[in-house]
Image 1 (tube, helix red, strand yellow):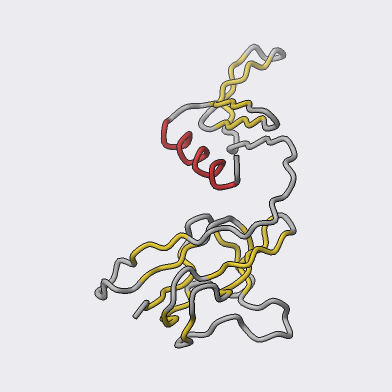
Image 2: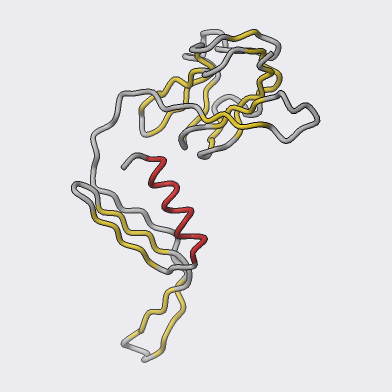
Length: 160
């Protein structure tokens, strides 16, 4: 089970209205708790409402060295030919390999399939995000060193 599967599971549980879901597989144990919880206080004999944060407990899994795949989907805009590149993982978005290096891409730059667009740091691993298509960078939607969510739009590309 990879990080995408876990993120999809969290979203599904949140939408389903379930208060708690436990999943156990070979080397992974996941517990997701959402919604209000009732606890009984033995000293006062009263039931108290507790609003817990969603919890994700996972057994350690060795890091995967492969680069995540890019998700490309059409942008909702006037031009139907624009493609948006979305974040395949949660992490911190960086436009440069190091602070003293130039940015991987700039607006107006022509890119080809396999070019590195950015890196996303997740759990101390820097994942290079490569383009799966050729085209021109139209917009960069995220500031350098900003946190990004799974499936958050990062770039808009004109594939022509």
